Length: 304
Image 1 (spheres, rainbow, N blue to C red):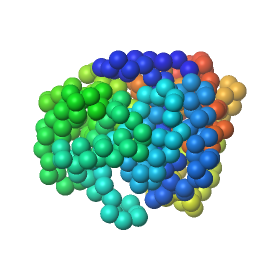
Image 2: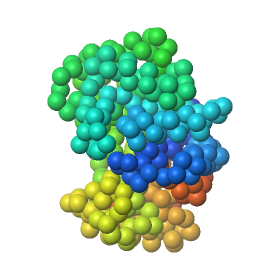
Image 3: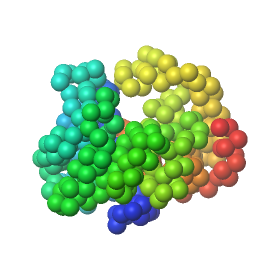
Image 4: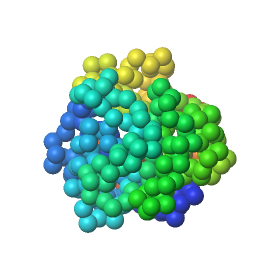
């Protein structure tokens, strides 16, 4: 798989990044067997994906631990996050702390689980839900960790365009990781990143399964809590209709719906990195030819 230079860094990464949110399991998704999860990670590496994204809160440490085991001895550009902690076993127990003290503690935990001496891309996972820490202090803590060699570059996640603008006042942000699929249309955050040379990293680019061959499923009955949520979205039925039409286009060109969507996103939607996660190794292997598709963008844009 081709590699691109990640904006404002010396890192060369695959435009498809393997995301480990799903393999972390509960409380967000069904928890996969350890061996199957590791096979999925290896499947990503085997097709040339060299960029992997994770976070401490994914499976409450499980995702990072699995990843640390799976990538031992492999050359991988690794992104993880900081600033969330949990006090129980469910989503409601999660809170945000972006203080310098907590970020440093969070990093040490990640380094131990991942069996790494440094992190390539370190990202603030969420703005504080109740803003207590000045953003200048949060960014300053990341800059200090970079100076110490514990992280190479840093970015933010789930930030609005206004929050990103504030963060950029203090230091040079390399990445913004937000939820995005082509069903969501234009966002100010993507345009801002494109204008400022920041790499936009899209998570859930397949709209949590809606832009796969599952688009006719009843998502409200999914056993994965995060998948059930999309059935409650205002445009759910409209988006299902768009997914059916995109699938018709994909079939007419002899490609899969996920490959069609991801190719369009990377080639024509100003998205530098698409983060794709799956518990199924065969689904990951299918992505090996995603960048080889050549379809006129107007054919897809007309559906959106």
